[in-house]
Image 1 (cartoon, rainbow, N blue to C red):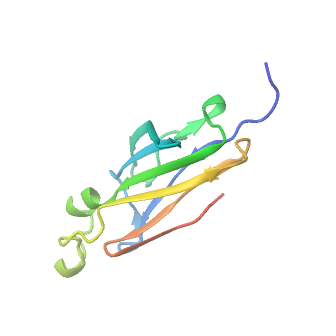
Image 2 (cartoon, helix red, strand yellow):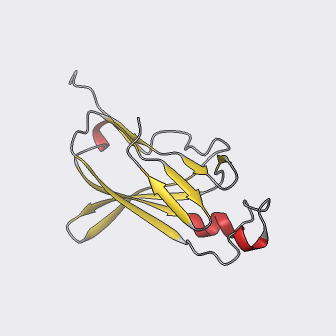
Image 3 (spheres, rainbow, N blue to C red):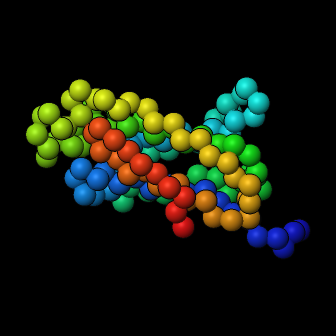
Length: 128
């Protein structure tokens, strides 16, 4: 048994247009190995815009290139932004799926990859 600490991966989605967490947003996690995309998780955010558990942790959280695929279009079309005027509600669903690719080079650390989402833009960063 190893005493070395293992890291983990989490995410959080905030609907910046409404100023609240984005609940019921589907997220897929992939590890990219050469030309292959290996799906590791398929989850949905809770009422706090988070997943119920880390997306990846322990011995499964290894160095490599990963992709989080956020199904933003489904979320926006589902009317989660219904408090906005129709022109801003995502009815035109400018955004659909948002792929975020990132590299894990220190798998003993916590990687937090949040998404700040509005009907016409998004941003991300490595959080803590």
